[in-house]
Image 1: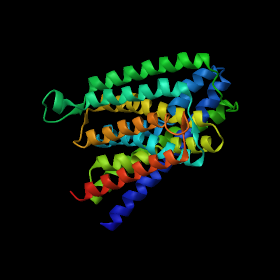
Image 2: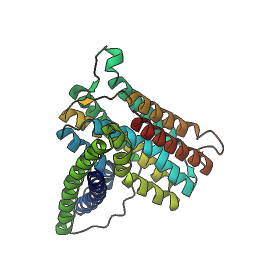
Image 3: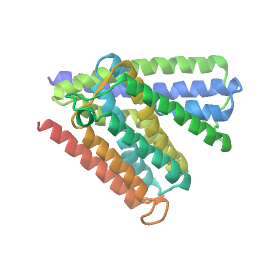
Image 4: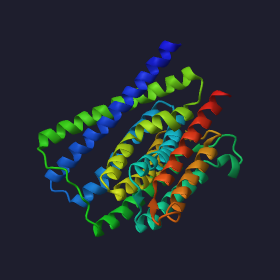
Length: 324
């Protein structure tokens, strides 16, 4: 039993590491190749940078859908979005208080609220239609993908008015191709090991796949966002930290969950309403933090509250699941 537990945990950790590195290599190579080919910088920012931090979630969820471990997919998306706000902005805000641009408050936060409400509606089959089991269906996955395309259009319109900073140096076609190939291999292998390790760990611990997706896999796949936001906060670039989190959350709900549902309908566990409620509260707390203390700023004490809420929720969820 202990050997199986350690083996699955090792597989999960190694898989997450390979996954994150694979995404990094793929984006580095693709960015270099795009610049070498003369593709405009705003297009690179719109596609490659935006996809980059969501690639781990996307590959894990697609792999889980193919392996009929769909409970991981919903837990991973909701858990990643909760971690993005409470854990990542909490860490970034402790490093340095985050000043918030008014555009972020007026556009990005409302879009995040809207994505949560859409997801609430999609998982409410048992309440709205009286079904015994709720699913995020293929047709709903298509709606989410369509929403994602609309969000890309919104980003394109915004980026055309704002120059995207991109200091990736040009590189040769061979080097870029090798990096992209290594990145793709890392994503495929890493996601496979992560899903296998996560499912095995859930079985060995006697907890649901949702819990593994909500915390272990969600935090692991959020590492790119965590590292990016922490470094951005340290260097005094709060817009990068906040934009990274808000954009990633919308990508996760629309693209990642939509693509997963298209492959296989996603069963909705009973606890999903509790987790979505926390995601809504986390987004609301982020919104309110703009008007408490120093205006349009996430202060260190507010960041500390973010972290406290996250860890209390993690402890409550984990021990509540084990106590069943």
